[in-house]
Image 1 (cartoon, rainbow, N blue to C red):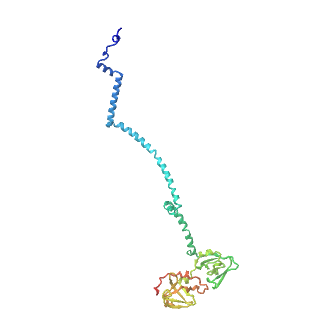
Image 2 (cartoon, rainbow, N blue to C red; image 1 turned 135 degrees about the vertical axis):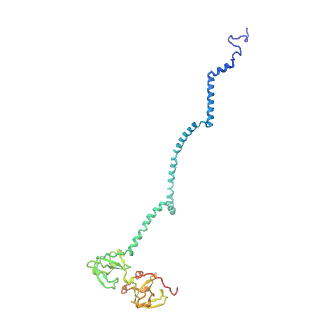
Image 3 (cartoon, one colour; image 1 turned 45 degrees about the vertical axis):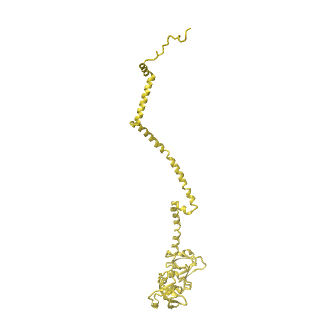
Length: 336
């Protein structure tokens, strides 16, 4: 039998016969598909490396600027769209501010007025309108408003009202006014106890002009204070008479410690030109023939009465008439 070494196939080639020449192997590789793909890949890698190098070197600026511009335009739009969210957060802050205001107003009075400025502007407006309303109605009503005449009516009485020559029950009766009759009046006493008839009267009361009627006979008592207070000419002139039966002393100065110059008896009348601020003393005017030695001397007003009222049983209150005289500076007294 033949050995295995001796058995060879007829087509087998000897070892070393498969190798081709080096030039032939290289030529055949590039011409094959793997060679072509490898060449293309190498070219692409080389071009990519070149492009990357040029891009890093800043030699290709146009393509790099286009991409950020598109991104920057889109980013601001996306950032500005969420802006309404902060506006939503502001609305709760406004709701929180009014809540502390009502809490401060009820508890302390002063903080409430300090925190809201408009409340101070609105509060004084109604307060100022309400406060000045009473003074104007009160001040003009009593004596400041002078009314020339006012029609007043008598009460409904069983008898007529008596009209007298002066504001005193001791003066002469000049007529009568029937119940519920209406007449014109022009003045009143300061204490409103008597009312004087005006000069203008209709028939049959023309003869009663200047007469006086007790105010208790009047129906509209509340309207009497609209009349002006009666100011006798003697009060304006300062003509006063001694009303005390014991007489009065005229002194050097306005005090009981001052020297007595002369004593006047009841019925003696002098003219005075001024008074002290409290109306307790009056100063004698110079130039009176019967009282030349009493010029600028002082007399106490307590026992003096207007000459027109001298014969009255009720002398009334003389203070409103004394206050018609000007206030003078008091002279020095012995006690300083």
